[in-house]
Image (cartoon, rainbow, N blue to C red; front, side, top):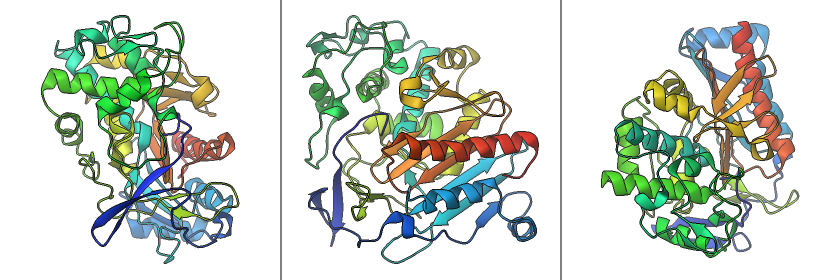
Length: 410
């Protein structure tokens, strides 16, 4: 996840059924090709209504729409070898787009609506499960963390008796971010290990006094969910969200599963702007857990955020709590505000959209939905580590949502 956490990449790969671990320095480079040299793929868009053939005919007469042009530009700018996007309008019509290549070594196309690691978008799923438990009377938002995880959060000024569940979800706890302190070792991490790493460091500030992004907050939220439900976080997400709203391409990887199931573009990493690309598709995602482990597609993310805003996942009272925000511009950009695992951002054409965004080695995803039912998500096949590049991806999302608002085909 980006937001995040500046850290050294840790990857795992499979060779002949065995997994071996590699650091960036030891990973095999995928040639010396630079991303900017990759040509965008031919414009490819599908639509639920009108049909795919009608969409192709329209593209032939009017040229590619704003989303296709935006994806092509991301690839040309060197932001990633491949890019993919999905949009949904207020009438439920969906479109999917791709650009670049899905495999640098073979030149294979980016699979339409392929699966990617969605990083910190996982936080919204975790927050939804927690707020469902609040609605059921099993968790209290303003109860101390210690009520559920007795004695776990202690040391270096960190104290679970003074931090509430709400402060975890809103990133106002002051807890240090464990992912700032992970080394290069590639292995499976348990959630409790991640918490112990965090608690070796001093509290950032008094709970509730400031806002600062910390993945530790969401690992603790996941542990509370497991404590209260007596089920794994993966089971609760699957039952309460994934199956409930039909997210057919979304799943929480099993422990030690480094693969991505189903059609997916490969994800890449490089140590500097002129360094060769490294294939980091297969990696143990356990260090992200409740803060960033999910795998999904753009269309599933659009369905999820639309269902959430429509009230299909939370009662009105809990959705209102989720949408109570505090300023979060330092991490998410101008005008951004953070609720309970949900981010609002202003649109250049007016109004707001709600989402989260996520970053994981190999992939970056940005997007969200509006209250009137528009949705757009964009993924690129490399983690972006500079604000300019992330701004370009945000720009594609914003243009798509604004085009939908004006009646133009994105």
